[in-house]
Length: 446
Image: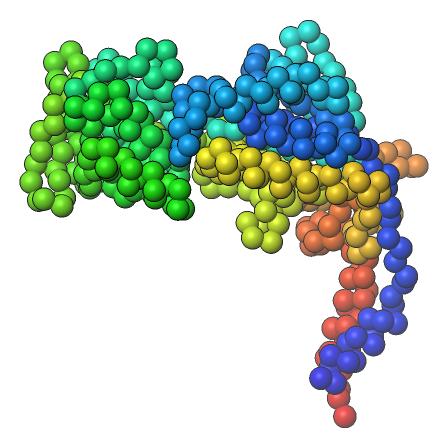
């Protein structure tokens, strides 16, 4: 205890008053992605009085939901939900819409981002106070798995959704195989939405032909929540049959020119089954979008091990990145169903409105700074900084030195530890203060 007091007093002798730095904020938001999550976030921000720039890489808004036939567990048509939202976004006076466009450059910090959007007809530049990432996810194409690409009647769930919308197939036998390409070493995660999609489409096939033999082959069945569990029981009552298979002994697709039988070892009965089929449907997982790496590099935000965006903390700071002013929602964050994506969009847009509503951004008092006389301009701190808060600028004597943007700096001290010339220092924890504390700790105590 005496040592701690002695160290605190030694440091206090060298302390200097620190003033909080305030910066003005721009009441404009950028939303990247025009799916259900992105459009919901954009509309929620406009209802709070903010202007929104919405950037969508495709020619049409709607995202993956445009390819869905019906929603689970309500069985309502997907376009009945997404259609009015698309119309409202396209006609909204507070939303500037960019379709067939991508974000090509981002600089600045919370409250003052400088954005460049690239399109076929040129570039557009504007400023924004906050950014929401809602770029969605892709669906795995299971080429070479379970006869996909070999047999014409082996489809993915998404392809079946298209057929159900256009010309619903009437089949006498169908097998839907879950966990195709997920929960394996290459993709160890559960995609969460596949089981309910399989249940939904199995039920639809059964409704089209009540006499059809419809099987769902699963390793485990994820029907979380009261509504999904009720939907599962309704599927069983409708006559959909469920069989568990092992990854070590997966189903085999047999046929000439087309899939005719599915051979599967029924782990519950302990015997092999031969299931005649007209249709085989593969439940493939959501996978990270191809633009995730590019957006991660532009915004200086991290990706997780599976390639989805990594928020600051799943419990303490959900839908937020560690970089202030940037938020994430929808399936680009992690596989989620429609209701979860909408909830996340409301959460992200509400959080994004806070710094814009405040009008000013207050920086940390304990931040890093550079001593120009010591700095050699090596750039080690620029590469080390996880918040992109440091850049090299020309000094008065004609050489480059490190400069810290205190609004972006979080005072983590990474640059101080990495600097080889001791030019980077941390307010409140300078080298001299720390050394004085060490001397006080090691001094003789009576």
